[in-house]
Image (cartoon, rainbow, N blue to C red; front, side, top):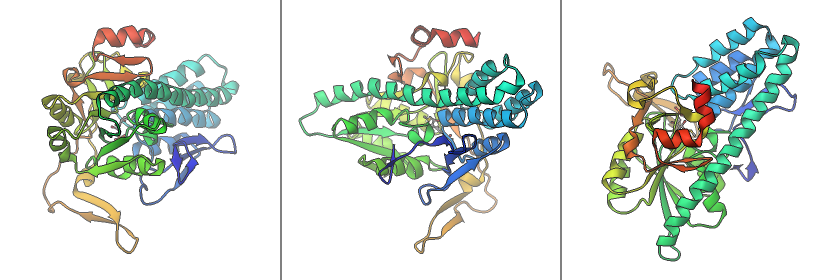
Length: 368
Ligand code: MRU
């Protein structure tokens, strides 16, 4: 998608052919900075410190992390060390493990001298596959938006609510929740996005608003607590969010606060869709609420806020009294019964085991 009119992806192989470029998302929206990753450790730190974030991008970064590791040490021990280092970088998004398993399956049977080249080739495929999947999500989600347009009066705008950043910055390109929105915008459909700020790290306010703005999509940033009010007053036609892991039973894990939006949508008959690429499905987890590990992050994300001062400096301030304990659960799980449908690259599915299994049988096979 576009930044200042120029097409960007969130991650890429640099011109030297081996190092990896990625947009440093910790600096947005205030500064556009590109980081260069040159080692497996760089990739692990980038994921852990959220220089890159968002489930699909975490997976893509891990894949390149394995490739960087194979340049350093392509032995069996090196392969294991890289896998073990990267797989613990963040706990909730299953795309991380999916990408690492894909890399290991490709690399394990290959002789060490050929592993680095094969690793880059497979990582490139994972990256391209992400873009293709998101194009599929775009097309399938567009049909839902078109159905809403058909029911509206001519010239009326479709209002979509989204939470966190499931935009192109969270993937390689297009995004998941935003893919249908970008396609609708490209097709000339009048669309407007309510962007939840997404405390405590504000991925909505900082990232979703930034990318929609650069691509020219009309949007409004709202405090996290506003969605219910908007839904009660008919100001949201549908909600589309992303996800970090979908359990076999259709439960959806996503950024903290998603569950509350789903409850409000249910109470107000607002369709609540989850956009997901198939690598986000975890057929090894039967019950999302019980079994998906929820990342707990540093309390400073709750106690402190960073922003730009009027004279242009970036400054961090404390907003919680000294000594007050805080809790920082990064994700929650929305039960399948609150989800209207799962927008995947293979169609819009019911959020249940039978539909997921019928659409992605090959994923079940690898989970067994
Ligand atoms: O903690 P983050 O910023 O990695 O959380 C991101 C989200 O929760 C996204 O909504 C999710 O990864 C889907 S991204 C297509």
